Image (tube, rainbow, N blue to C red):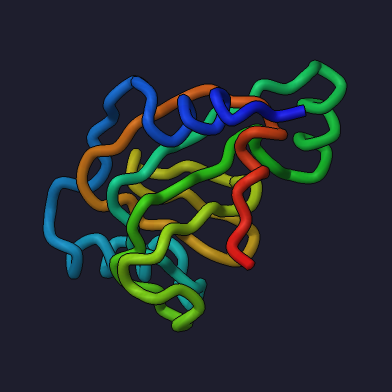
Length: 134
């Protein structure tokens, strides 16, 4: 069972600071359009790249599905190309499939564009996926 302390640490605790994209939002969108033509994108800030704590068995299953043991949480959506998320909402991605250029976290359906610096943290699958927008 996931505790409130685990979730609190994940959302507000210390982590390793990582740079993300330091240029303009338009430059980042253009970079993503070139790297992932036609794929939906979501520009986020105040983000946390979550490395999931998994067993070797779980890691093997994820790898077989082409997935990374990682997900992304962002405290703030800036722009979603498909209008799924409104500006200033929070968002949590599904499992990642790639992490490119240090600023693009790709899932099967979306590329999350990491604007500005963020944090990298470890968490259990339970803690990371306990956050849902209903």
